[in-house]
Length: 370
Ligand code: ATP
Ligand code: MG
Image (cartoon, rainbow, N blue to C red; front, side):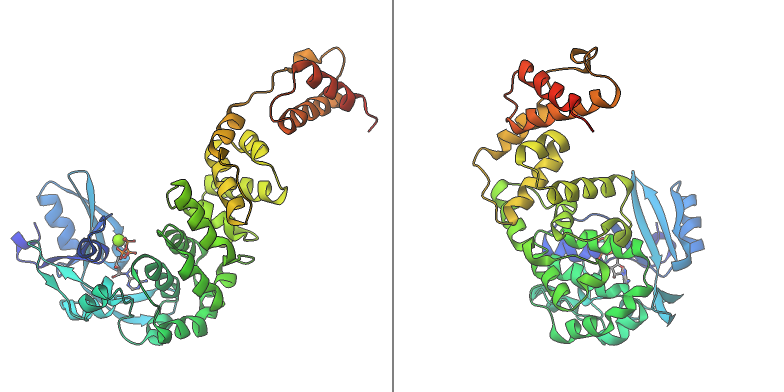
């Protein structure tokens, strides 16, 4: 559509990088010299839906065949306040490349697969070298989020971290205080979802950045967690890894969704109260109890070989007495206390106590003076 109207249209960023690495491509970004209004007009003329998803940065999402294609006009950085680069439109792919963060993210491809490489990203990608476009200090001062993006792309596509870039990240880390927690959270979650984020997170910790973005976090158990996940055939899962870091308040630091925050709180609570596998299985249910077990393994606990089956049994266990069995004998708060005690005894017995013993336990607790 764009080329038909005489414009340039190039694939750029993650789609090109991942295709060259033979890795899955999530979303497709297109860079063009057409201005956003032209993109929108052309899309409408072609019967496609233009959505102004980031019009202030020159981005129009064009929905075609059920997929959203982010079409962004070539830009150059003009001025920055460290929170977000401020950009102007350009007709020049070289300028557009120079405002991008890393050389491996500044690769372009034509529709028939020819790759354009204005800033030397191809040899860097081949060597798995994550290199800033331009001087690291300057690029970070323009947009401090690039510090987190450095560790994210290092985890996914990098090999050894460049010392100059690492030093710049460490020295400029205080600037992260200017970045919205949402944006930090988005990058950090993607970092933790890498096949093995442990080396990158360890570098973040050494550079004093981990504690800054996630107070209380400790990277120490991450390598063992990744190993335990691999043994168990569990996929990379950022919430489990986040829970293993033991941060004080991940919800505030990373602006998690309500569901994600709940899952973090449940796991943190289970770990803090030293729940057994049975208790975690019963009280947390299956996916969370598996996370709990893997984190315990990472902390050095030897899991029984049948732990997955034990968790399944615990997760499907149902207390075999109902409140009705105690009513008449216990009322009000005493009834609640009794039921709680019966449930705990049931868990602690490995779900083996018969109903008579559970009723006894409930009566004992219910009748205790408070
Ligand atoms: P992913 O596979 O996670 O989508 P991506 O490389 O496409 O990776 P995005 O965050 O989607 O990453 O950004 C798309 C492209 O936009 C990047 O490849 C990079 O060229 C550019 N970019 C994004 N954010 C920044 C930034 N803060 N500073 C400079 N360039 C950026
Ligand atoms: Mg992308």
